[in-house]
Length: 111
Image (tube, rainbow, N blue to C red; front, side, top):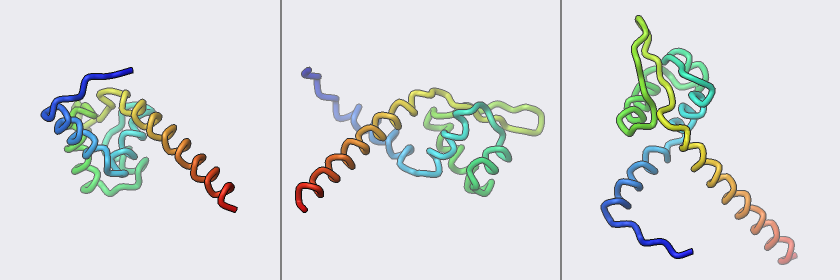
């Protein structure tokens, strides 16, 4: 199946989005939000990140459109804006499994 190449501007935008996701702590935050909306204290407990560091990650995730936030009294509640990020994670995990299986197969042949 042949697909039309992406425009350079589109590639830059896609690369920027991947750059946001390239930080494991941000993926941990998104993974914690997979269960449902959480406030900063709950996210800190779920991820083990201190609140100052977590707030920086949340700010970037919000600015990039990965999470939404709303105020509830004294708390700010964060939620996933779009769970399709986990489709990307599933695709990558599948690719990693295939790559690892191919490496194991090569090692067995090399014996």
